[in-house]
Length: 218
Figure 1 (cartoon, rainbow, N blue to C red):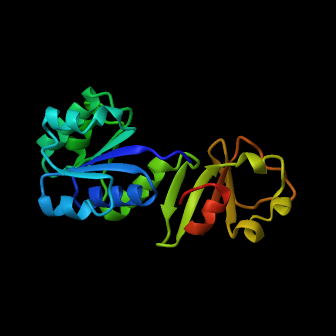
Figure 2 (cartoon, helix red, strand yellow):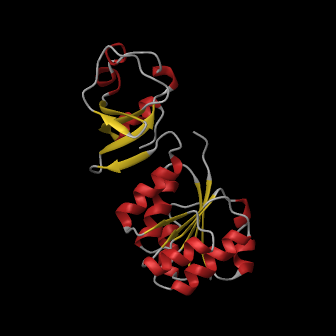
Figure 3 (cartoon, rainbow, N blue to C red):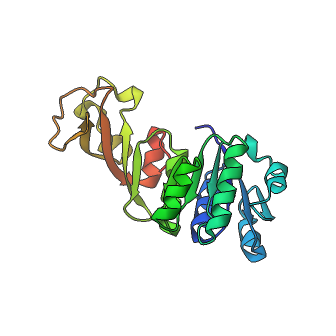
């Protein structure tokens, strides 16, 4: 999977969790905050960490923010700063902007000014968001624990046309297919002899480390 370049503006619990998870997976991460202690902490694992005002257009230009694949605006308690950072990031042409909202009014404003995704998370949701951003291979991910996740993903190309019995997913990968979605309908009583269809979405449970065996980073 191709690694991407991310910017994280604001290093509270949410922003720090997102930055750490993205960096641990080998992505390039630029982290910015006004708090020197938070920046020092982030500097231990991100590509670049800077003490700066994210509402300053010159700061964003110096960071080369227009070249990033995605920017996460983690500022939320200062609504004005959050809105300004989102507007400036949008004006710089960033392709995908995620913004943290403090409340529904804040969310509505962020939607109006062009944020692509709006969230209301803390640290745990920050980790999940980062993995969803990276994981183009899956539709959704729910962390069941630190080691186990439930993933919704399209049928891998190498599985199309093969049955559950042929694939022996549990024996070969240590994963359990617990359901199949088609056109929004979930089926959990699966026929082990039925070939996998390209249009289906699989619901799989397993250890995060085992998902890597099928090319999914969970």
